[in-house]
Image (cartoon, rainbow, N blue to C red; front, side, top):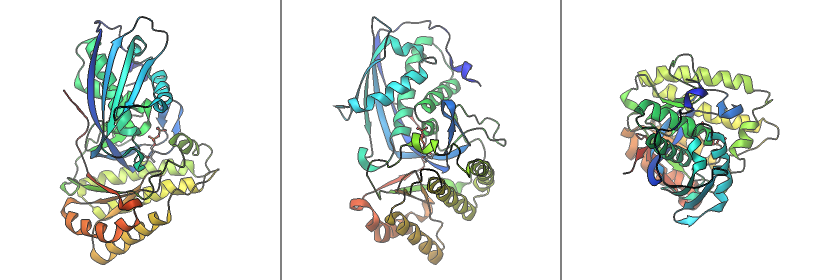
Length: 360
Ligand code: DP6
């Protein structure tokens, strides 16, 4: 598939107005996307767990307007008008206009809500952009008539990527790959694909408890962050490493080797932060409590033989990953030892999920 394949033929139908609703989850990367080229093309392949409970629901209402000279939309979060969100969506519309040319012909009302608190430090861009992309693709399906499900998902993921890279991994469950990788022939830089190989039952219902260490605004926006990889002294090695780690994970997923899973996932998280610490300008996004949590996880693992591990996003919050069969034991450990390091004791329990769905 190329970008050209996502430019639609002239629409065969007209619709005056209507509304669609999609619910889309967040995701947590195991091999991280960090660094991109022009047009939201990732510098390396990544793979993520789709989450189940952290999600965004978006209703997109649309009505035909007379002129097609500018984008026209209003955004609401939890029923409250949010003009502050408009520039990001305007940029998104500009990027996708050639692929969904109907966007200039309608006025849109975008009503969105998240299951997680907006100020929790959990990025809503993956779930938010994928929900919006799915709504737009649904509307387009109405204008073109029959579209097969595979193309529908690819196109929605393609559009979501143009809103936020990691959003293209938020449509399907439960493991999604984005970015070309030589062992995964269906993988693409343009959209996410469902992980196509065998996954051991040990990964079934894998748990992710998100410890909210710092709920403040992001210190480094993702755009600034990805740009730090341009001319980064270690960039090329890092991109190579992501390919190697994804290859290694294919074996891990098949065989259920949780020790190797831990090695790869924790190393990926720390490498992401190492990239930020060694770029110019440089940043430390972990907080003292992030390190306290990591150390306690390591001690707990050493002492109990648990398969608990952690991963990080581009921030201070910690995602604690563990197999479902350890729910009780790890749950107790989190409550007794780790919650003390969370801001206001806040954390979110989640697990691997099955992807986005349309609400009808
Ligand atoms: C650290 O997808 O937020 O979470 O494409 O600029 O919107 P943009 O970036 P974004 O980057 C996410 C980076 C990450 C790792 C990952 O999810 O793979």
